[in-house]
Image 1 (cartoon, one colour):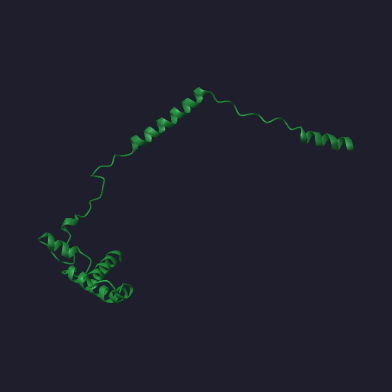
Image 2: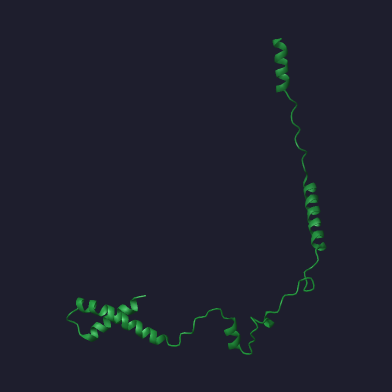
Amino acid sequence: EIKNLIEKEDLTLKQPPKQSAAKITRAQIQEETERRNAAAAAALKKKEPLTHINQPLEENINRVQVDGFEARSITEAISILSTNDVDDDKHPERRMKAAYAAFEAANFPRIKAENPTLRMSQLKQILNKDWMRSP
């Protein structure tokens, strides 16, 4: 009985050796790559070239009317196509001058307290330097 078990075990352990894959020669590899290249070239030839006839027509945006408005000049076209409703800043220098005056009113007492012996023109120079440094 033990001998039978040993024989069965030996049979399961001694399986036939696995057959190795057949070796591929360089000629076979080259032949396979040529077949793949030929198939790829045939696929490219089958594809129809893209032309303007195949493409769908696009709408000419130069002829589009926006909300029924029509522009005859560049400025009219810009005003129709612009999306911002903010009026143009007609006097930016006035805003800058007002901002500087507010800055001066807010910071002059501080600078005067820091430098009590300086003249007015010197204090204004310090204020101007601070104005240039401030964002």
